[in-house]
Image (cartoon, rainbow, N blue to C red; front, side, top):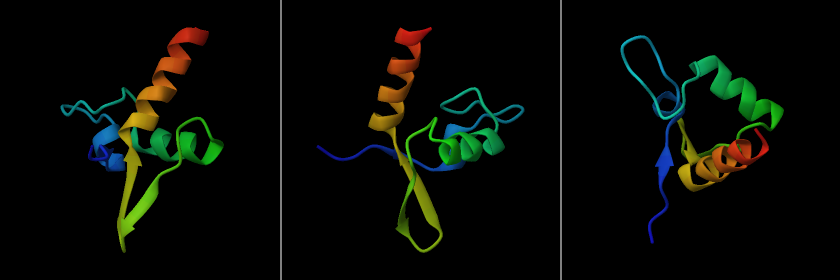
Amino acid sequence: MAMRVARPNQLASRPGKPGYLPISPATVWRWAKEGRLPQPFKIGPGTTVFDLDEVDAFLAKQAKSA
């Protein structure tokens, strides 16, 4: 099965453009730095992505603890 990935700008929401998560681009990076989101990884020089399966697992864990 192929890995599902998303670039940071696909995760973040902006005015008029909903993303995968209802958070700003700055929050995506801050949460990744703080360990609240799974760590992104590079697939090329200038291309950073998040594993969507890890993001989904993170969201499921957050839903259970809420």
